[in-house]
Length: 459
Image (cartoon, rainbow, N blue to C red; front, side):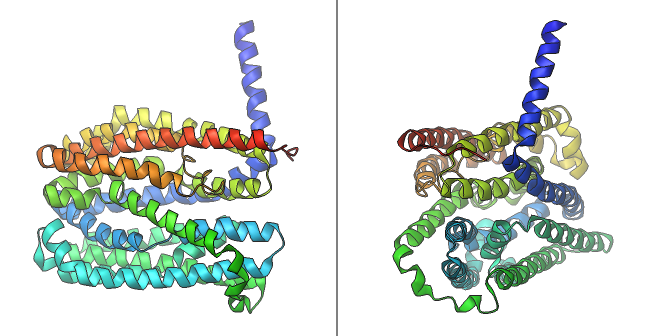
């Protein structure tokens, strides 16, 4: 009893110490806004998925996944992940009192993202015949693929806008917009379900949701920019960044390459499945992936909130605080991920069955396989965050490049024979291996900089 009592007091003291730290309190507060929104959005997203699956069946659900992923992947191909650049460099310049340079960074990010979005839509229009024939095996879907591509233009500057709102602590605003967009989408999906709508009706609903989200976030970010820098923020001279062009370019190119590799390895499985298998296998995989995405949703807000604090602390050379944030964030993510994963192992067949009995047992098998990789990236959600503000934006790219070669090779060899379970094996293995390697590299770099400087006392 004495031992149990001692362990209880030790645990309570540790928990109190974590929760009382101002840095962690800020992360928890901001994560709380997004967590609440993401939890609601997760439930609504699951409801959308169930309605779509029951309305269109396995193959129809697979086609929806192929159409939406085709457009989003081409958008990612031309994206320079301006959100991360905005958080890093607006944060750096703001910390040094350089308001003009901070505004100029946001301006450059917005203009760059606009060019990338227009280019992405041009690629969608150009490649729609290829996508309809190779991935969907339905040439008649060219028109609906092109139409859904308008979602790219609806999200013209959403990455930059999201980054700015995150940096200026507008997580509550992001949460409200997230919930509102999810509510709108599920209401429209429910209408399509009740009216026995078609594939085209469902795709149009997703298009409307994307446009509403992108327009809302962008408008709110421009309002925030005016609040922080005045009405003429957009006239901030780009020439003020001349001394940092090389750093900005390297950051943008590195994150684009990293995003491209992520596109190939994590965000395009439905297209690979469509090309090397059938839309039926895509449907099985889509449901398993949707369920694991729900598992990841509560942790996803920690990525942006932790990154904001880590970028600030690294800019201020507060290494003790950086280590604290990573340790406490890992414990928090594990507290959700491990019990939730066990729940899916025991009750996963019932969850899959809600979408429709025709998804069993294949979708459940895929779910079990995916959990291995998802647990790793959930618990160590920060595996890429630290390296960016530390000055190693190309490190994740190099690790993912090696993983991408192995995964693409495995896709060609396994997917034609195993279908959806084969793709699940490859993605889970990729997530597990790359997460562990990047965690190791992050720990090494933090230790190196701690030994090379005299750390200041944490607040």
